Length: 180
Image (tube, rainbow, N blue to C red; front, side):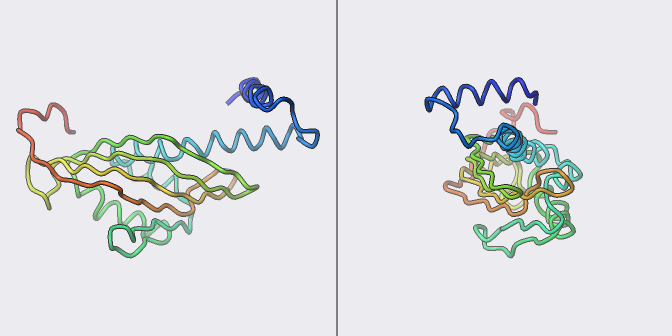
């Protein structure tokens, strides 16, 4: 992200509130805006990596000692990269022939070297062996995050999914046009 873009964004923010606060340090503002932009990309990268079943891309998002909280689904949390990797390879990626996820309304709050945030998600998983052939598992909800800087990059330190709505429906096989 260019400095010019960040300053244009900062100028728009200052215009909205009247003027820049006297105590605003240009470099700390730039760093905060840069961090917010970098962090906001993580949930979207997560959705693409999960849908593409790209384990290395998924793992690149998580901190070394990250917690992937599965309590909303009645499971123990996966703690640490090895456990998260195993969860995705043994369960998540095998649970569906393919999936399509949408992430929206990403919110980020930066506090120095730590941050938190949330998003809304819609996840559609197709042909889960547990539900049978020609089924679509539809889940809507929110993700809640804690982020941390690790080796100069923002990473997910904790991720919790909280489903709001969940259903499974059958579909006519000819309706499936593409499912890698």
